[in-house]
Length: 154
Image (tube, rainbow, N blue to C red):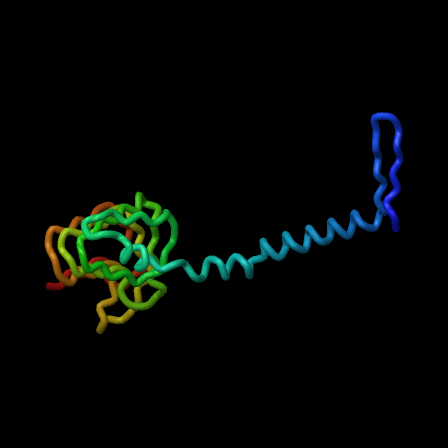
């Protein structure tokens, strides 16, 4: 069906076939439903990026510059760095093993939320495991849904 145009001085009015408007509305509704569906949201939330990548990119004695958000664990820190989550970085262990392990001196962990360690007593699954090191600063962190909160070994 062609589009008709009515022209009057200073006015152009285009008339569209009435079937295109409902079809366009249906297409927009279908796209919105697909984008906002619970299935789409579940997939996006199910796989957070690993924080270990950001830890590995942080220079020795530097401060981690990851964007605020939720990250996957486990994380192993083996050199002095600082992580200041400002209360807005969450490390999710995914229910396996220890969430964060420190194997260095001079590490600062501040304002992090560590959650969902494993449940193995043999593996001593913890929110935070400090295996070696000294002069580490652990400050204003929230640790929940873990088998052991903070474990010190050495």
